Image (cartoon, rainbow, N blue to C red):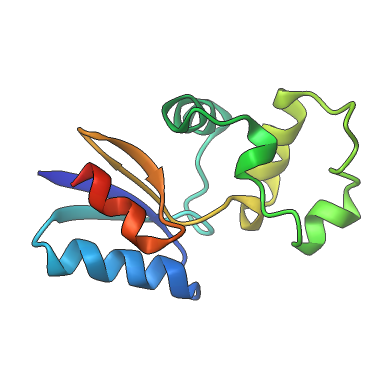
Length: 115
């Protein structure tokens, strides 16, 4: 089995999730999404796999969320996805994808369902 983890090394939950993958002997690819931001199309695919809307994947307490008035309920899915492309810190983390599914590692143990 292999996995992809959208990872922020500064995030405790992300590091703990990565640790679970290592402990279980899973081969994985790390995408440091703050440096290698997913495209709008990639985010749409992840949202579909997670069965979430864009707002549900956003970290609403981050400064760019407030600074760009992203709480505005009239914003479209495309607007919110573009905001995550422009400000990747807004993307909830970590996201782990395997052949068995895609989850957000909050809590980190969520990853156990797909490995």
